[in-house]
Length: 161
Length: 161
DNA sequence: TACATAATTAAAATGAATACAAAATTGAAA
DNA sequence: TTTCAATTTTGTATTCATTTTAATTATGTA
Ligand SMILES: [Mn+2]
Ligand SMILES: [Mn+2]
Ligand SMILES: [Zn+2]
Ligand SMILES: [Zn+2]
Image (cartoon, rainbow over all chains, first blue to last red; front, side, top):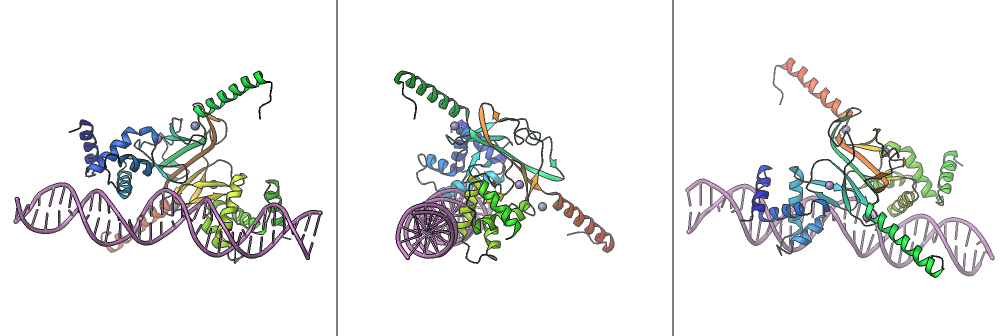
């Protein structure tokens, strides 16, 4: 049997989740898409290629099971749907308003690092931090576009519209 | 005319929002419930007492207009619905898993305070930070319950169930 | 008054997530 | 191997927040 799947099997067993085929494939997908923070829809869509009859409900059920056992984290940042993250350690995210991608961001934060577990008397169990803005790549590609149009203006002598 | 409503009228005018009756009342409600972070439903429910035919759509429309003009902030923290906050300055929140309330939390954060506007090359436009856990009041009332049952046990000699 | 524009409303549509019950699978015990 | 209960998967229906659409109403101006 696939050595990777054996590894995933152990992970599920360790968390007290019975390792079924669909659960293994969902876990496999998550591990391959660590940095994508996929939606339920994305996971389902992709798995349909391998398991043509896997139901959306199963993906929901599985992810909820994973959530309960702390195997994954749910990232609610777009406001419309939950994104799933196999990295369940508390870390920050950045959502690009231009290209829509969600990336991990490392920032110094005593709360995320678990150094402080209480704020003003309130006991912290979860820390959620994220930014919205324009990502590096989108900023750069905008600069490039501007530069190009400057060149074309200098050639034509026409102002940009 | 109500002096407060005149004040709200100015606020809307300054933001380029035509001050209609329903908009003024929604703004008034928000100002009275600053610390509540109400849902659309809560706002609608309450306003129905004053304006028996105000529609849920109008509340949605109005809040979306307020959001666009930066008059309010949308707090998505429960995962199910948006909570609205007349304090649009970026600040942290705490959601109590026990009693469900959402409170403002002041924490030292260079990003929320606007000192840093870029993280690893990505341009920040919004900063969102919140915690989930057990609030001070709920923690205290749990302690009290425990203490009480200890007293009652010492009186009755019976173990707690 | 008449017309244009904007705001409000009710009704319908959308979309993520859950509830539910039937069918399929699993894993022992007999 | 057969049996049988427990668990999982599946498809469908439903819920719930929010958006869209289109009709109605209010507002302002010529
Ligand atoms: Mn992440
Ligand atoms: Mn607040
Ligand atoms: Zn981008
Ligand atoms: Zn509480």
